Image (tube, rainbow, N blue to C red; front, side, top):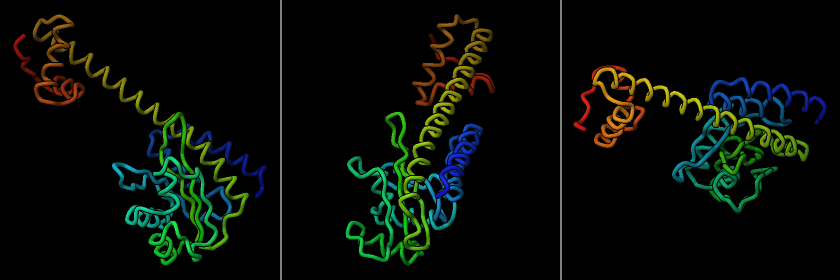
Length: 232
């Protein structure tokens, strides 16, 4: 592993991740970056769990997506454990999946038939939130060295911070959009029905509760056309 070159590529990646315009774009770049800068990596993906189901958030290479699918199907596997078990190790490096893997009696042989020779998994973790696991794959047994594992761990830690930042920015953007929509809708109601600011907000709130829809959706409806407010 050329650590000087790795550091240079990681610095470039940091700027690239900050330039992504969405969480999904950040996830996609994380997956592709793993293939580009970690020695031995031929495919990579980000796996998470939603309602106890495995979901591939991003994948670079069919091998990653198919392996994640197998782990979700069998509910076992190294990367599934990283993303699922709070007591599990934060990283795995499996040198040769053709060897017996007692912890994953279904996944291991299926992954080998798929063409997976070796695999690593790293928890994506930042600000107290587990995003899932960054999974690195190779068709060749023994492809990942200790240096590869160190590089993968550094990359995963680096990317988790970028992912947390992207998530925060996206949430902030949605919050600002919602605030703007509600304010504009209140202004429309105040002008159209001669309501006070408090009364206009109360109209939006009542419609939201009555129809069991989000306040933002009610505001968007007001902006698109007439809305008959409930009796005050």
